[in-house]
Length: 118
Image 1 (tube, rainbow, N blue to C red):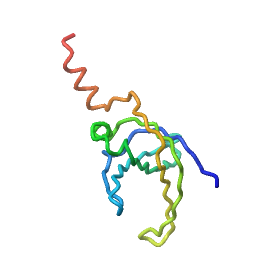
Image 2: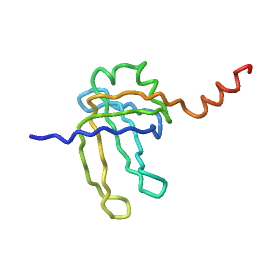
Image 3: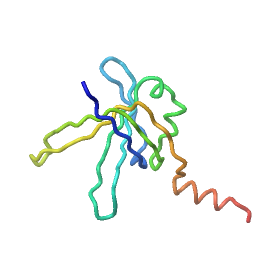
Image 4: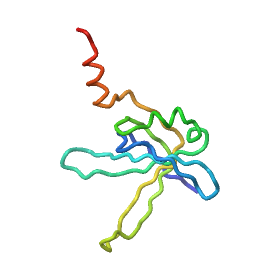
């Protein structure tokens, strides 16, 4: 059986969301929009973290809106019916690895600059 593996980088659209599977397994959900340019459509990915990374609360606290991430994992496509009756598509990544990039949210950059005495 083959797997579709993908690597996506982007800035989180909101803080990480913690959920629990029916089995009790802790899951952390990330929403990552990826765009190829201003006039191009944005593709939204939902990244699912489980296992040791999901259980690491200090790591999860770092996953705030605007944080840059690089996520690699198995890609899964799903279809669903939207409220208007049309078909919607979702892209989920079941993460094998995740790294936080060096991106600093804009609000924190302004605060750091204001605190500098020169």
